[in-house]
Image (cartoon, rainbow, N blue to C red; front, side):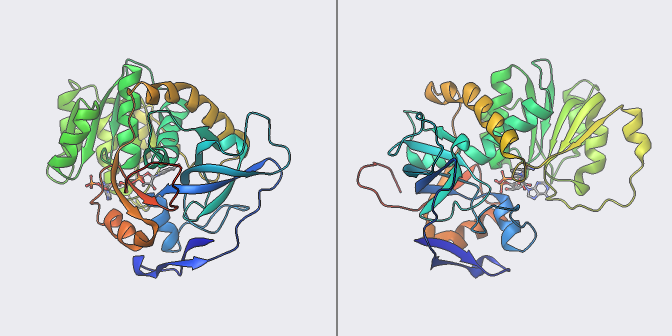
Length: 336
Ligand SMILES: NC(=O)c1ccc[n+]([C@@H]2O[C@H](COP(=O)([O-])OP(=O)(O)OC[C@H]3O[C@@H](n4cnc5c(N)ncnc54)[C@H](OP(=O)(O)O)[C@@H]3O)[C@@H](O)[C@H]2O)c1
């Protein structure tokens, strides 16, 4: 089959190559991939900074949509060949076929194109995990979401709106802020032009936010600390603004009685991910069906344009998701 291969370096080091089709093991399904999508983590992996966890495919790609084409032993009767699915992966999505534990596949909402389905698993399940499993979101909370126009950000804003809570987002352009407000953000702050914490305190009448979703890290540390309310929860799940913060004074965190939490999804156990997929599906699939939630697909490119897709993402030019078309299939109507 064709799959994206790479040598460590820039986007120009990504290329299509031939590799063997994977066989499903015990409890796994094999999926003929129609679409996959790119994530920020893929760009880190390409640069040699984010190796796959033990047992995961060394092919990139954390999510896909497609059709189950083979079952390994031990799959339950509810999983059948021919089902249209979207899947959360620890790797392997940038390829014509991928295998996955059956527990991590979800049915495709009937209103969805297969390209929309590929934009769901990684960022929506991450946002769900951060808000509901780790952040214990309540309807009275105000949440600060950094990178509101990112894949994770555009999902988080919709999950917060549905829960009845409020959110303030940051983004690097007015265009991104305006768009994310249409998804439900109460306010947007351009972090390149405005003092983030000062604006958050103005917007919350001096109280600050109850929860911060922080994918920035070091460069936003002081702003987050100032913007956090007493007893606030602060979840770090990415380090786009750096990992090293040499002058941290823990007194600030203590005075705020802050809960500082760090999280990753890819390396979690199958048990953890299975329950996450199950709980997320229960909340989100009916809301994808009725249009309350929508995956944000900015662009669809052929898999052969993988270098262009990574370049766009690293230039911070993406709003929502870039999806890659992998397989042609006459039985499924979709756009490119
Ligand atoms: N821990 C986990 O389980 C997990 C899972 C999934 C994703 N993640 C992390 O979540 C983050 C978002 O991922 P994604 O795939 O949704 O990203 P994405 O769609 O590529 O969006 C990232 C956006 O972040 C903004 N940004 C970049 N550098 C920044 C900086 N230094 N300061 C502030 N904003 C910056 C840019 O938008 P602007 O124009 O607004 O600057 C950029 O477009 C990444 O850090 C990723 O590694 C973590």
